[in-house]
Length: 329
Image (tube, rainbow, N blue to C red; front, side):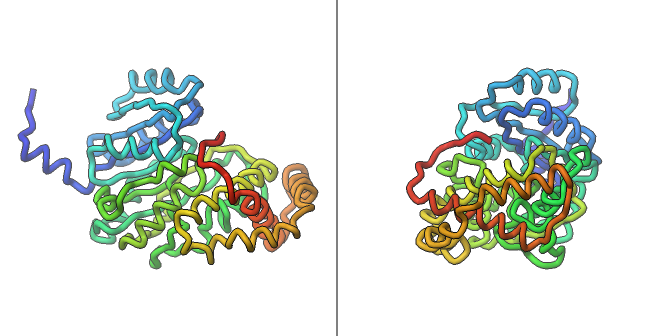
């Protein structure tokens, strides 16, 4: 058996080509195993890779599924289960366990393409493996979901992802800090008081909030369109609009923490005024849902944006007094 000297071990840990993949997970055993299998098939050598799954209090078969996968896999895989505290706390637990200099965040329903890690590493190398560079990859819908026109819109033009506005050669704003497909040097966290804000227990705004703080601390966020991952999360107009309402509600928590973001998030007084104009929102959602799901009819982009903003405004107008807590994902 060969032994690694302390000097060699420290050198390996400092190697910027070594990657720790952090995956928070909640009740998605089947898709999580598919993500792990996709990581096992990466073009990056497994000796440079560790995977950390933080189970955020799942009540399904997640633990058994990961245990079974680890038994038959050669991945360096760590599994940790915690009480349900939200994805921010789960990612923080993964960060604390990570051994390698480069952290990659993936969703438990986001399947990386074979060259996913290779492309993240290549983008960091193009920027000199700088300690202030983070990289966001391209996430698209899994093909078997047969995305509708509305899903294509939210995946390219916002509000879920806004890749249509991203450029490889131009640093991005904090709104592109998507933790479903993201890499950054762990030393970036030394620039902020704490990593993910665990007050933001819902899977809403917790990644953007960290991106905002890191950007203010000097982070440069770059786009790697060839670092592709596939979002395997079925949704439709009605479900996504409910999520937008929740996003609007919890934007008030973000605004309370960062009042200077009022121009982007709209003041509570503004959204309450605008909410009078979205009283017929339910009928509009039902109509767009039918046209999108049943007829797969593409509608003008301004109409989609009107729907998106109306859902956000309704939620924001009702969310000024919400309690911080965790809602179902």
